[in-house]
Image (cartoon, rainbow, N blue to C red; front, side, top):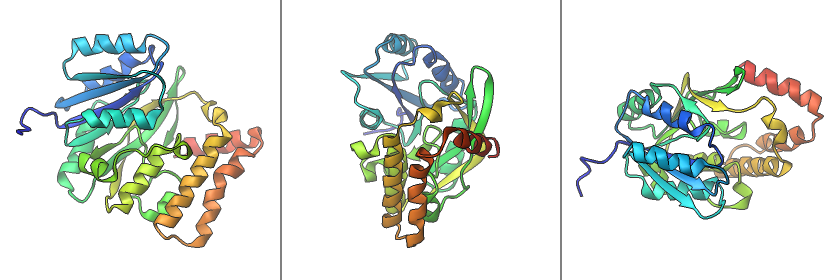
Length: 271
């Protein structure tokens, strides 16, 4: 089958109760310097007007594909549903309440085109709320397996990945123990399969997140993060002392809120 009319980039987006932000998120995609894309949105059982707004966006732009889960299934299943419809050689992520810089796709695509040994590209990410930008996160330029025990080595929502890498690892793993860390686990699977990645040290992506969102992170999610760190240690046969890092999410979860506030804000402002 000829791929001449296929989009080069497939953007996969799970949408859930984001009626007030979805138009802005899609506008930042439509404003990209690279226009050969398709946007695959899957509504994950929204209870507001998200799906109606997505329908309007689809009618206005034929590059948009719209799917719908009958009820809330979670991000991993939702993104896997999007992947089944993806036709592009490259898969980009985006969330329905975020925005990205106009040249994001161009910069990520250039790296993947010029470096066949690179299969994952992401960038620095800024955090913003209604008062403006309040923090930033950055990861190593070329993450090594030893970097996986500290934290997820790529910003998920800002990534662009070769479709081949998703196909070979079977997309996102669906498991309760991987809720909220499905991307972290995805990178482990890809590196274990021989794929490698790169981070662009420019803030090409902005995540909408209030300053206190981390406080609402459940202890169950912290247990899941610890579990994934243990998977990384075993998968990459890292030295035993790395299990100290696996305990960190649990220690942080038990830390007094006032102390964690100081450490968290200092970390995001310094990166």
